[in-house]
Length: 182
Image 1 (cartoon, one colour):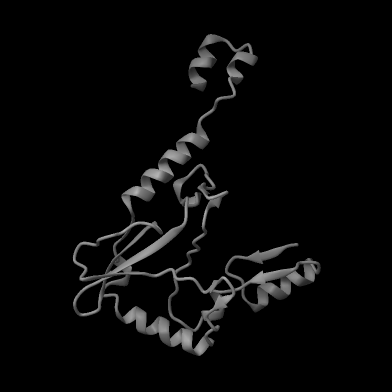
Image 2 (tube, rainbow, N blue to C red):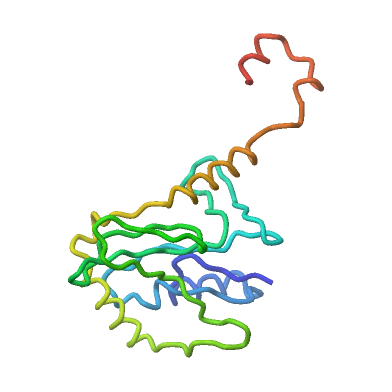
C-alpha cells in the first residue's frame, strides 16, 4: 500500500496517478487550506516503539524526528496574544516567560471510539485567520524545544550514531588511516 504526501495539490495528484496508477491514496492538507495566506508546514509524530521513545535520526538535526509522545505548549499574554511556543513531551508541565496562560495544542481527535466531527474547510479557514491575528509578529515568533525533550533527543541520537561494530578490527588498515577514521 502506498500513501503519498508532501505539499500535494490537485494537479500534482493527476500527474502522479497518470504515472503510478496503483498508488493507494494521498495525504493532502496544506494545499486544501491554500486559501489561507500562510500555513505552517509541520508534522508531529508520536515516536514510540513498545512505549519507549525513539526517533528517526539523520545527518542533520533538521531531518531528524523528535522522540516520544509530543505536545505543543502555547503561551498567551493577558490580552490573548501569543507570546511563545514550546514543543515538549506530553507529560511535561511547561511555563512560558511572559505568558499568563499556557495551553496544550495537541488534543485527541479520535480516542477509544469517540471522535470529534470533521470541520468544514470554511470553518477551518476562519479559525486559522483568527489564530493568525493573535500573533504580534508571526515572522519572529519565539519557539523552542523543552529542556527535557532536547536532552532526550540528543541522548537517543548519540546512542543511535554510536558505532559498536568494531569494524576497525576486521579491516587491516594502516595506522594513519585508523586515526583519520576516528
